[in-house]
Amino acid sequence: KRGNDLNFGYKKANRLVNLPTKKETAANQETLKSYLNFYQNAQEKLKPLAEKIAYTGGTRGPIVVMVSNYGQAQFVMNFHCSAKARGLDTSRVLLFATDQDTYDFATSMGITTFYDDRIFASVPQGAAIDYDDVNYGKIMMSKVYCVHLINSLGYDLLFQDADLVWYKDPLEYFKNRTDGFDMYFQHDGDHHPGNFKPLAANTGFYYVRYNKRTEYFFDVFVRMGDLVLNHKSHQAAFTIVANEHMALRSLRIKVLAEDQLLFMSGYHLFNARHMVKKVVQGKYTPYLYHANWLAGNNKKPTLASMLNWFVNDTCYESIPSPNNESTPEFKLWCCLTEPLVTDGALLS
Image 1 (cartoon, rainbow, N blue to C red):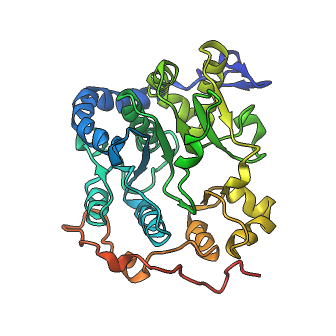
Image 2: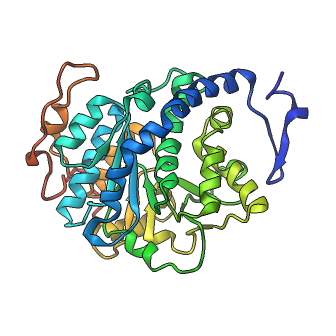
Image 3: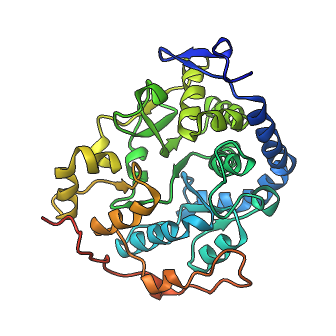
C-alpha cells in the first residue's frame, strides 16, 4: 500500500519519509483543482489591492500576509488591537479571509482583507474531522495559497500566523538584512528533530524575498497538499520540499537561531522563562511573541498572562456563530488601550 510500505519511502535527514497514500493524493487533487481553476481570476482581483499595500507611503515595500478562518477571529482581532495600542503601523498587513464572516468582521475593524469565495468558500470555519480528509488539506493549504498568490505578483512578503503580537515592527529587521538569503524563518526550538531537520524553521513566521528561486519553490509547494496530509503538518512538508530546493535549486534559507530572542515564541515560555518574564516586566523588548508550542485553548490565557491581550471580551463574545445571518460591525470599543491583566500575569 503506497505510503505505508517502507520501500516507497526516501531518506531525509537520516530518517525514512513515506510517500503520500492514494487517498491523500486524491484529497489533494480535489483541493488543488478548486484553487487552480480560479487562480488567475483571483490573482487579477488581488493585484490592485496588493499594489496599494506594497506602495504604502509612496515607496515599494513588503506585504505582511495573514490568513484566517472564523475560528481564529479572536487572534486576528487581538493582533490588530495590540498593534494599535502600541502605536505600530499595520498599513502593510493584508489578511486573507477564508470565509465571508471573517471578511465582514475584519473589514469592519479596518483590517485590509481579501476574500475570493471561489478559492476559499469551501474552507471550513471550524476544525477538520480528521487529518486525511479534504477539509484538513484546505485549512493547511490556505496558508500556502495566500503566500503563493502574493509571491506570484512579484512582492517580498512577511507571512505570520494570527496567534502572535508585535512589540516592534519586524519589517525594520528584515529591511536591514543584506546577506543575500531568499527566506528567513523564526527559530522553532529544539523539538521533533526528525520532523524538522535540519532547519527547525517555524512556518508560522517567515520572510520571503521575491526572486525566481522563491517563485519556483512556491509553484512547486502549492501542489504538495498530499505531503501535508501525509505528515499531518504544513511545517514538516515545507521542510521536506525546502531541503530539496536548497540542495538542488540553490534556494538560500536562514533560520534566525542566533536572533531567536528577538523573535520569541512558546518555545521560550518553556525553555527561557526568565527572558519571557523580562519582556512582561518591560526589561527586554523583542520584535514579537508567537503563541505557538501551545494547545489552542491555552493560547489566549498565555497571551493574557504576558499582558498581550488587548480585546474587550464583551466585544469578542458578541461575535456570532458561523452561518448566522449577519455579523455585527465592530467599533473601536473592541480594542483596549491597555492590556487585560489576569491573575496569572508573569510579573514576578
